[in-house]
Amino acid sequence: MAKSYKIAVMPGDGTGPEVTAEAVKVLKVAGEKFGFTLDMTEFDFGGERYMRTGETLPDSAVEELRKFDSILLGAIGHPDVAPGILEKGILLKARFELDQYINLRPVKLYPGVPTPIKDKGPEDIDFVVVRENTGDLYSGAGGFTMKGTPQEVAIQSSVYNRFQVDRCLKYAFEYAKKHGKKAQGKGNNNTLALCGKTNVLTYVYDLWERAFHEMGKAEYSDIARDYYHVDATCMWFVKNPEWFDVIVTGNMFGDIITDLGAMIQGGMGIAAGGNINPEGVSMFEPIGGSAPKYTGQNVINPLAAICAGQMMLETLGQEQAGKKIEDAVKFITANKLDGLGAGKMGYSTTEVGDLVAEKVAE
Ligand code: IPM
Ligand code: MN
Image (tube, rainbow, N blue to C red; front, side, top):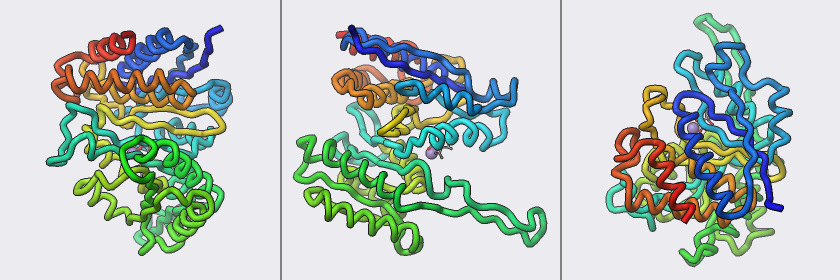
């Protein structure tokens, strides 16, 4: 019998449903081609539901989501809902409750895609960020005193324990071993770089740095180790992106540097990521937001959502199908699209989905 996966689909807000529909289209074709089925269940969590019911992601839904093999998310964010409510109530809640402790964000420039970095091409912009996804400034530790007075104090703490750091490093070293540049036949080394700020954050990144070298020395002596401060990381992303292979970092720096990464790989239309619990249920999403102003116009770029679907298949163990989708996306960017921006592709959202689906079916 064909292998079957139970997938929860959360299209979410704005253009989320449009891009998710294209990802689903491509995933179904990949399933037919590679002999597996995807049993999809849709959930309507997002801004509209919140305004109707006051519910973000209830605990009962989290329990429901635990029963799936994977989750595909469109976008969360609604112009009529105050910032933070949906982000914390849905996206961060899913990440934390399902303990998706890795946020895997590849930064790959595909052929034919314009990058704002002069004189750099696909061979130069090709690395992966392993962002820790549960701790740091996202831990929620903090508070106000004397709120609303001129003496008001606000504190928001970066929190990490050794367990969180070690499990993230373990994933990153293993990832570098399997998918680093040497493993891919693209270089002499598999390299893992730690991105931190050891000159100022002398507690949290001291812990990261010690744990990084301890694990590297003891278990991964064949993986080269680099270290960059986060500000320098931004500088080198622009100046010498070819230096990077696999980068591991905390939650906050990972959030920031992956938006820069998304821009150098051609923008939010193409950047995808996975919130991964290697032992549990993972959730894949385009990195870009809900883009409300483009909603319902059939102009938004679905490639990031399609690439999120690709990452989902790879994580489920359908590597060949994932590779086929990636190759199809590369073919489309190299040969078909005028650009990656909304309304600038030379094709509509659904047409781009069709183009990829046709190529996957070949
Ligand atoms: C991201 C987003 C989220 C984050 C927001 C929406 C909470 O920026 O996925 O990078 O900060 O993690
Ligand atoms: Mn972000």
